[in-house]
Length: 236
Image (cartoon, rainbow, N blue to C red; front, top):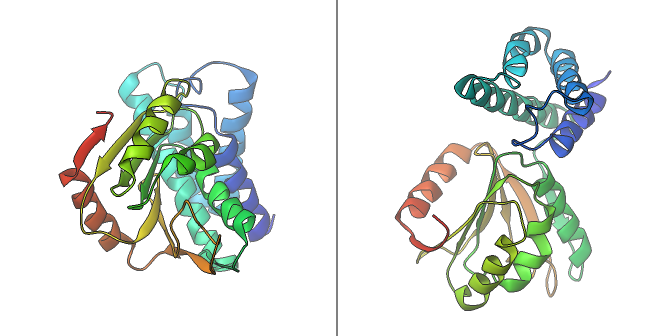
């Protein structure tokens, strides 16, 4: 397999990963996914892939701590492999969407969300009810959803409350002042900046969607602090 094929396989692994609640079940579908993960990681890097086999085996451990550690390490190394291969083949994601390209913008966000296996954090002061119905259904069951908003809480909160009653997501909403940019953080390991508000992406003007790489650690630290100090509006 070449790098492009390995990248496609790893990205599909994230999209098709069993939920945290079902991955411990001793069923053929899970065995197939675990085997694919081991093979894809070894194809990416024989040494790191070989070391990851123990973590993959631990995912189905009956010991809670061992299972959680195996799951965390496996997800992390899959993300690492994907990011390394993207930089070798296509580089970090950078997409320009023309004015009126609403579907093109939506489809790029959808693909990013479908790669999440643990946690999604949206940063946007204008998150509203329309945003909830447009994007949250594309996040896998069991993935935690965190929303940092501000200006549109009156429409955002009722939509979040209604959606949470019929979804298998842990959803938390916080508000804060003094931020204007729009970001998505995926599984604490990747970050994407949107040039437009998520609810309006490319509706009236051109916009961009850019993966943050060199400044990721600094950006993550900044918004972790803003999140931790924000006002809890819904959820924990």
